[in-house]
Length: 220
Ligand SMILES: C[S@@+](CC[C@H](N)C(=O)[O-])C[C@H]1O[C@@H](n2cnc3c(N)ncnc32)[C@H](O)[C@@H]1O
Image (cartoon, rainbow, N blue to C red; front, side, top):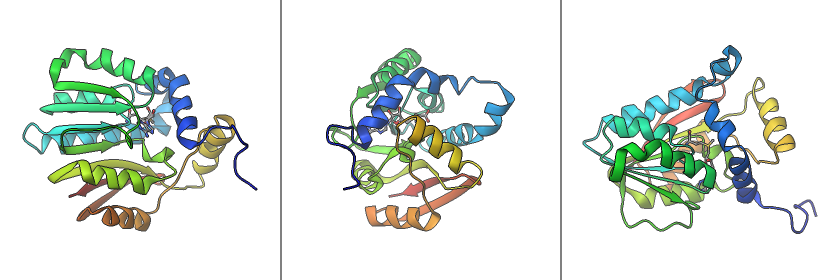
């Protein structure tokens, strides 16, 4: 009765549309030096730093970047010593930008246009990245379970997760869902621990970078 109208797009298609039409706008956030944007975006740089630190803690790890976007994280983790980097994203313009940005790393970097849940991978990875991804997933448990399957023993997942806050929550809701027709989801500390433990991960480290979200590193 209250579902979407017949013929309207489901959640993943709406997310894909957003990051197809707004790929350049998302990429520009990384360079935007306007004080207000910088103030609202510290999470972008904190999560990238956790990815870099984690990759640097392994010896030439194989890295899978789920929802890799425009390669902004990829270039840093490759510089930090990733032996192999695979980025997957279902937005073509994002993958186009990644290809340009990561071209200099040659065969160490592979980019795939596709949906993470249905894509086939022949290999397992030491570090999986899920940065700015879980914000848009109606079925996060399926992603956590698939990440566990693809994670090598001793490997880990680094992810970022928004939490509801009265400061940012209403603005995000209006901006993404009402204006942008893109679903967004929030997480709690307890919910995250439960979800990753249910997926099979043994240790969950939670870093709360601010009022509006969590950074996680979960170990297989
Ligand atoms: C906010 S962007 C983050 C990009 C990048 N991780 C970063 O932090 O710069 C989220 C990306 O996830 C991608 N994405 C969302 N769901 C996906 C799925 N099921 N499979 C592949 N990519 C997905 C979107 O297309 C988008 O490019």
